[in-house]
Amino acid sequence: MTSGVSHRRGEHVRQTVLASALEELAANGFHGATIAGVAGRSGVHETTIYRRWLTRENLFVAALLEGSADAIPAPDTGSTRGDLLAIVREVLGYVGSPTGTALLRAALLPADDTYADARKEFWTQRLDALSPVVQRGVERGDLRADTDARVLLEMLIAPIHGRLLLTGEPVDDDLAERLVELALNGAAAPPGQR
Image (tube, rainbow, N blue to C red; front, side, top):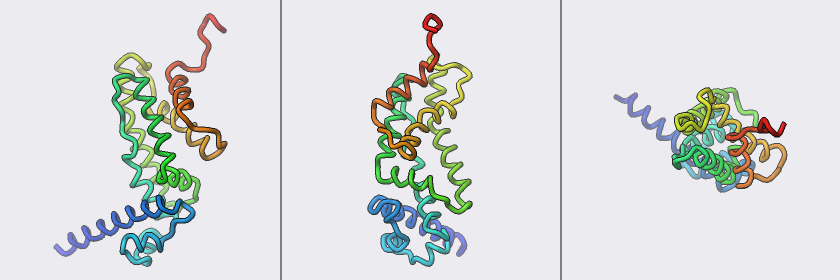
C-alpha cells in the first residue's frame, strides 16, 4: 500500500513540476526560463527536478510535449475546407502563444535522447487526433480515398514551422488560405491550361 501512495505522490510531483515549467516558459520565454524559477513556482527542490530530468532542456521539452498535447482540437465545421482551415488557423494561433513559441524553440534544441521518443510520440498523437478531419473529407468525397492523412496534415503544418524557424516570412491568415487551397486543389494546371 505504501508503494501506491509513493507512486501517486511521484506522479503529483511530476505534474506539478511540468505545469510550473510551462508557467515559467510563458513568463520568461525559453531562454529566460530557469530550473530555479520552476522550483520556486512548484515548491519542489531543484535537486529533485535535476534528478528526474537531468538537464534544463529535458525538463522544458517534457513540459512542452505534455502541455501542448491537446492544444489543437480536431474541428468539425461541416466542410472539409472549413476543417482544414480551422486546423491551420489553430496552429497559427498556437505557435503565436508563449507556449507555442517556446515549443518551436525547444524543437531546435539538442535534448537528451530520453525525449526523442517522446517528441515522435507527441507528433504521432497530434496527427492521429486530427486525422478524423481527413477521414470525413474522404467520406464526403472531397478528398481522394487514398489520401494519407498524416502527409496531408504535415503538408499543412510544416510550412508554418518552416517560416517561423527558418525564413522569418509572415505567417498569417492569407498563408492559411493558400495552404488549404493548395492542399485541396493541388498545384497542377488544369488539362486545358498546360
